[in-house]
Image 1 (cartoon, rainbow, N blue to C red):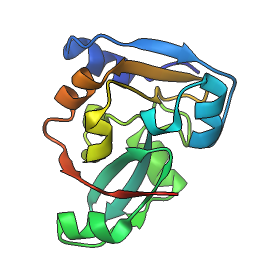
Image 2: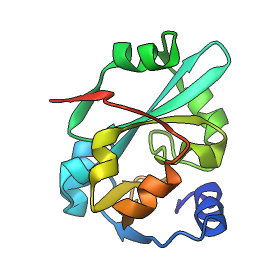
Image 3: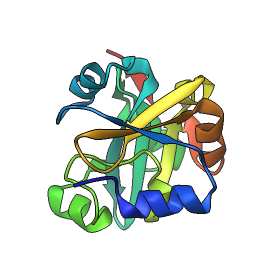
Image 4: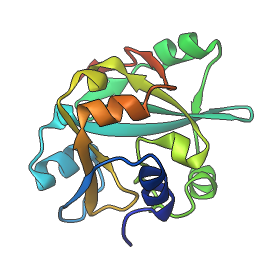
Length: 156
């Protein structure tokens, strides 16, 4: 598989400059950072959560663990992890477990950790397990303008 066409179309519609960084197939964010030779704190990890009929992608540095209680407080209710069927339905053109940070491209709300908005450059999943999207931190922050912001992760 290659980059999600939904993500590609979204980036093109936003006239955003980016490049793709190939890497050997991986299945965890820390494996991905090592395989792609990128710092773990510059790799955004997406965690998909749901509550009733609302979904949100929490985007945190790959070196962090999600603080569910902080995210729940920001939205005013608790979230649970979504199952594989829900992931497949929400991200039809993505490989399972390779969810891009730009959930808005897929019609999903986004909550971004503020640590990611201060970076000079950032990497995130392209929708497959062998490529990352790389862009400037400034462009990423602009794309995240409508996202809920906070400190949703804690360093592990």
